[in-house]
Structure formats: C-alpha cells, structure tokens
Amino acid sequence: MADSSIMNQTGPISFNKKRPGSDEFDHDNLGLTKKTSMNNPSIISWEDPAGSLAKCRHEFGEHGGVNMSIEASATFTVMEPETMGRMFNGELGPDRDFFIYSRHFNPTVLNLSRQLAALEGTEAAYCTASGMSAIASILMQLCSSGGHVVASRTLYGGTHALLSHFLPRTCNITTSFVDVRDLDSVKEAIVQGRTNVLYFESISNPTLTVANVPELCRIAHDKGVVVVVDNTFAPMVLSPARLGADVVVHSISKYISGGADIIAGAVCGPASLVNSMMDLHQGTLMLLGPTMNPKVAFELSERIPHLGLRMKEHCNRALAFATRMKKLGLKVIYPGLEEHPDHALLKTLANKDYGFGGILCVDMETEERANRLMNILQNFAQFGFMAVSLGYYETLMSCSGSSTSSELNPDEKALAGISPGLVRMSIGYVGTLEQKWSQLEKALSMVHDFGLAHKN
Ligand SMILES: Cc1ncc(COP(=O)(O)O)c(C=O)c1O
Image (cartoon, rainbow, N blue to C red):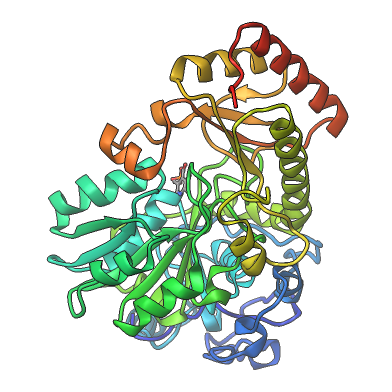
C-alpha cells in the first residue's frame, strides 16, 4: 500500500463512527486527517509514558460503552465498488476508517497499537501474535538477503537463535554478536554500507545489563544504521525511542499483558516503517501474517491503563528483595543496587518514579544449587512458581542457562555472562511484601541448612 495507512491517530476522544452514505467520511473533526501527527511534539517529546498514554485517544463502544467495541470481522464492506480499488492502491486507509481485511489493519488491533505507540513515544506501532514474530518481522523488513546485523551477545535465547541460526539459513542475513557495553567493539563491528541494524535489549535477558541507549544510537546513526531495541524487560521504566532508538519491540506476553495468559508482541517506530510492514508486495506483517486476534487486542487494551501501577509495584518489591537478599550474603544481580555496574547509567536513563525493573537474579553458581533453591522456594515456601516468562503477578523463577538461554552454546553463555547457577526471578506483587519476604527467608534458611548459600 502506498501511503494510506497511519497508526498514530491521537486526540482525546473517538465516539462511535457509523459509516455514512458515502465512503468519503470526513474524519477531520476527530483529528484523524492523514499525517496530522507525523511531527506531533506530544508524541516525540520526552514525557512520562503514563502521561502520554493518558493523552491517547479514548475509544468508546458502539453503544456509548466506556470500553471500546471489538471489531471481530475478518473482512470489511464498502459502500461503492470503486472504493475497493482505492483501498488496494493505497489511496484510502485506516486513517480515514477504511479497512480491507484483518491480516492487514484491524480497528481493534490498531487501537491497542496506538496505546503502544503512546507508551513508547513513537509515531506509530502495530501489534503482532507474539514477541518473536514482532522481532522476526522487523528484522526481515529492515534487512534483505546479504544484510548484516550487529547484535548484543546477551539476548533472549529465541532472539539469539533467530539471529545466529534461522536468519542466516533462510534469508542470508548474518549477525555479529558484540558486548554492547564495549562501545568501541560496537563501532568496529558495524560495517558502513553493509550493516542494516544494531539490535539489543534495553535491560538484557537474563543478565540485567543496561544498554547505554543514547551512546549506542549515536554510534549507529553516525554509520547510517537503524537501531532496534527490545524493551520487554522495562516498559514504563525505560523509553528507548525517547533516548534515540528508531524502533522498539516488545513481547507483550510479559509485563504489558501481566496475566501470563496471552502471547503477543509489538513493533513501535516511525509511521512510514510500520506502514511498509503492511505493504501488499513487500510487507512482512502483511505477507508473513503474524496477525493479532482483535479479541486479544481488546483484552490487552484494558490492561494498559494499569501497567504503570503494576510496574511500580514489581520494581518496589524487586528492590526490597534484592536489598534484603544481598544483606543475607546472596550473590544478587539487580540494577537497582548501587554496586551493580550499570546502576548509575540506569538512573540517568530511567523514567522518573518507576524504579529499576522487576527482575532480579541470584547466582547460585551451579545448576544443582539453582534447582534446589527453586524447588524449596516453590514447594516448601510457596514463594513463587518454577516457570519461564516474566511480568506475572506471581513470582516466576527459572534457571536461565538450562531454559530460556539454552539456545546459546556453552561458549556463548560464558561470553554473555550467564552462570550455570543463575536463577532469574520475575518478582510478583501478590500478598504483602512482609508475607512474601518471610516465605523467602524461610526458604533461604532451608537453603542455608543444605549448605547452598553463596559464601562471600
Ligand atoms: C526479552 C524477550 N524478547 C522477546 C521474547 C519473545 O517473546 P514471545 O514469547 O512473546 O514471542 C522474550 C520471551 O521470553 C523475551 O524474554
């Protein structure tokens, strides 16, 4: 599609719009003219994500309901036969309430996407069926066969496998993995004219290193490279696009969902890029079809307004537990602790008052010790669940080396700093803090009896 589409509609309110007699419904009064907010400073300026979410247009339901209606249709009618051709040639699009088919834009998914764009301070966004499909789609959109990515060595195992195995085999797209804390090595790895993308996680899975987003963007942009940042670990806490990133991707399955009941993802970035992903001839979203179900989009839209509150409590609890666990002599990794090597950096980059992230790691040094700790925490102390994933209201624990980072070979794990005994904990917020702390203390005393505590 040429340029019919725009995902960045803003404005305070959208009432139900019954399609009038003509397909040429003028939406100007709703602030929906094409490209109105391309350079809308309220979108691109530095702003608390909660503030920009509150400014996002509120979609009402068909009957005046305070919640929007779900547009569950796979396909959409037109009033006049000529309209179909005009939609297909890109003349008419979602900016004017013209929809074709829900593998292309869908109104309910578009509404969630507007919220994601507001959250991340990008011009546009579109949501996908999973975080992995968002990541694969943006990388395949930005790189052609023969393309090159420079990526952080410390990435979620699935992304690492996509870059190191899948994309080279299927698309002839190769990746150089680097330590993104070493800015010189990033500079060296970028081959001007060949490298398309610099890819990293804002807070890395599972080692919790914090990326110096502004510096990395400066290096990449100097060489004409697009910066893609996975902000799954730090929604609200960090806003990579406001720090210079071109594209932000999310696994919505984690904090944004918060319920551990939905798999979903998003690509947030410039409207032209998001629109190109829907192109009928070249768009990865349109042609590979990682489509989000509108019913899922509705569910997720209802959870976005309390994301900030949830993040604050995840972060509060994580800081409290990390501080207390450290005092007990455990080897705790948490960027909210002053001794964490990236603490000062995170303080300068983070949005105010959200905290330092809801994940902490405990290094138990061996997998056996890690497994025994998790077993006690789940089965004797009811502190949390042994499960992968994160962002759930209950605490989730997994030994990264043998689970979500198992795609990395032993050398890659060592380079990424993933100890075999690393236990990643996504700290939940159910119960009272003291109740959960006493469960944790009980577990740790049992661990101590087993002689498992780290000896400083
Ligand atoms: C940082 C990060 N990015 C992306 C993904 C993939 O997301 P999804 O499981 O929604 O496909 C994950 C999943 O664990 C992740 O931790």
